Amino acid sequence: MRRRRKNRPHVSHERWLVSYADFITLMFAFFVVLFATSQADKKKQAEVSQAIDQAFRTLGLFQPAKIDAHVKAVAISEDQAAAQVNIVMGDQLAAPEDVKKDLTRLERELQGKLSNQIAKHVVALHIGRDGLVISLREAGFYDSGSAVPHASSMSSLDEIAETLKASPYDIRIEGHTDNVPIHTGQFDSNWELSTARATRLARLFIEQHGFQPARLSASGYAEYHPVASNATAEGRSENRRVDIIVLPHITVPPAAAAPGSVSGSAPVERAMIRKDASDFNANATLAR
Image 1: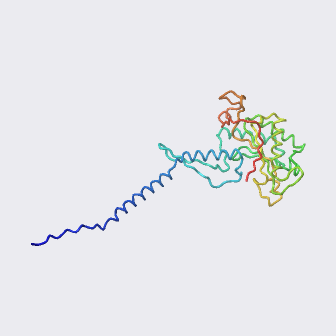
Image 2 (image 1 turned 90 degrees about the vertical axis):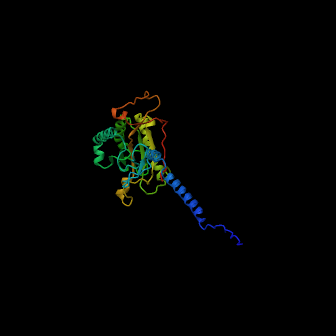
Image 3 (image 1 turned 180 degrees about the horizontal axis):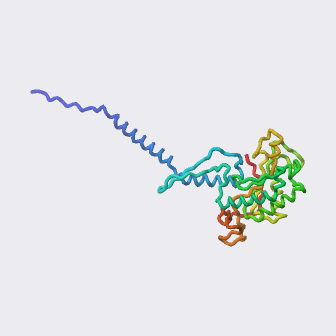
């Protein structure tokens, strides 16, 4: 009688496929997570970028130099296609068209009143990224190392103050110097000198011309925001200046106007309104 041959158990040589399949599944899940992370809410990112940009504009931390590259953010929603948002606007004023026209009217009015000073190159006017810039050169308004305006320049300052007082826009006053160090009994550095010039002019607007303090801010930038090269005497002369910037927005002091109403011309009514009015604070911004 023949013996029955025992069936040997079948040995599988393809067990590696199980581990391989698990590995592939984990890799798929990993890349799905990476993709989901890269598709964060870009609309919120654009809003945050705009808010930060506006804050730096208000503080004057962006230099007025021309910016060639435009940083763009994309806002994406479920129902709409991507929209481009300019974060840095170069030299273009970011304001409604009617506000731009109103600032242009102010520029023309000041050009007429300050024609002699403009011809002597002690006053310069232009509309830049932040608003209407009235640049007062040191040669026409200050002695070297002094924060007190010349007595002969007071008539020009009065013309500027009375013209700007009639407008409702906020005003930022900036002090600037060249890169020549200063150390006197009154000022230890260009920071103190530039800040003192800006704050003294702000006080003059408030005390002698009745400006509402909430409309004004003052900053000192020393030699760190030049408009010309400090390598030449002419360039240093241009850098020693005080800039009066008419900003394209207004501040409504408490109880100064009824809710929903803004004093001033019609274009102003559509301007951006900041409701965070506070007592006058001359901020000596130490910009890096």
